Image (cartoon, rainbow, N blue to C red; front, side):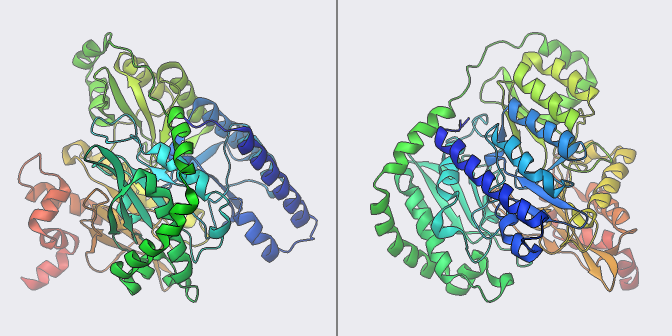
Amino acid sequence: MYAYTDFDRDFLAERNAQFRAQVARRIDGSLTEDEFKPLRLMNGLYLQLHAYMLRVAIPYGTLNAAQMRQLAMIADRWDKGYGHFTTRQNIQYNWPALRDVPDMLDALGEVGMHAIQTSGNTIRNVTADHFASAAAEEVADPRPVAELIRQWSTDHSEFQFLPRKFKVAVTGSDQDRAVTAAHDIGLRLVKREGEIGATVLVGGGLGRTPMIGKVLADFVALDDLLPYLEAVVAVYNLLGRRDNKYKARIKITVHENGIEEIRRLVEAEFAPRKAAFNGADMAILENIRADFAAPDFTDGQGAYPTHYTHDPVFRSFVDTNTVAHRHADYAILTVSLKAHGATPGDATSDQMRTLADIAERFAHDELRISHEQNVILPHMPKRHLRAVFDLLRAEGLGTANIGLASDIIACPGMDYCALATARSIPVAQEIATRFDELKLEHEVGPLKIKISGCINACGHHHVGHIGILGLDRAGVENYQITLGGDGGPDAVIGERAGPGFAYDEVVDAIERLVRAYLEVRDNADETFLETYRRLGAAPFKAALYPEVKANAA
């Protein structure tokens, strides 16, 4: 993975020193909160419902053991002993004291981490496929491209005050686990006639006006990619609306001007930008690629086949939480941060240390954070899987529920977020607990439930097979349900099912939906989403609103 240079370390040290002075001026009253706000946001520091919140970038979701241990140390020393992994592959600390934040940033800098551009109207943390370099079907590892974009966009003088925040995701697989179609710019690395390039999508996004990204360029050669991205952002910077923050994202710019006009403007902007780059970015990319060389894989599975055959609990864990690796003697292991009844995405400091130890001892010192709020060990030798399973279970990390009903994405909601209008974490906890009690989720199979606590959609409910949106209705929490959304390569926005449900009704409503699916699916192999696409919403609406069905009869 990318290793910081002296330039990186010096830049970060200077930036942290600047912020330390700004915090001191806020504490002694030299700065008001209004004056301090833009300064803290440039360094990832929010003011939430109960306390400040520090959002730390995990570029393209990749960590090593030393970095994970440092995150654990920070959680113990300056927070409440845990961190929250987010849908943008960041980690958030929800309880730091303002006076401690400069020390936290210095501690992050010691391991090559920071919180720059995790907030504000800038290019945010670049996300990528969490199975990068391990998935068998991958065309190219997206992380070198993501790192190149990170270096280019960090502190970019032209793009520090964009009309709104700007999100970029990169995938190197046709499976699109990075949900590229729901980003301001989505890059899908493809190979054409032996050459690697990217299909560029633009104008995707969720929030109050969800849209699927449109193809701006079918193929951009890698040599041209960075100046092409710069041309896109430059066009947006000039055209994007600043009169209304709800219409300021690039998806609205594309919608109002049309994809053809955006393409014409980008092409016109591209030529001079490319000349200015003069190939320097490709030399940097070549150096970055060396940092992402694959580890030396070792042949052999040891006693793994025996354990798998004779231990049904271990077999269930393997079947649910691993997928095929490009090396036959390895697996991609996803560790669930969704134990039934737990807060989705939270990890204690002890759990972080356990994951760091496992990565260092067994799995080539590499971890990933997924946008689905779980931790990935991308290069796990099968011969070590049984020992790792035992270590995970001892730390409460052995839940076999990846991709199932209790593997729920949920934003912090009204428990932490100042923007939220409803709770999302308790809803997720109760749904997971209900399905654990029913012992149904393995029978149900793949099902993505996503919950947002407000219209900003940080829980990605629009692309959930079942989406839940919590809103405030005259002072009362109300939960709308959407059906049929998906964030994969053929991404689609879910359709609203009908009237919402009260807090104490929503879990029962989800159970009725799932039971309806079990009744109408064609066979046990037909997933919830496939059944929905085959039959439409009618049988699910009938299950959600039985009183309407009774009245119609």
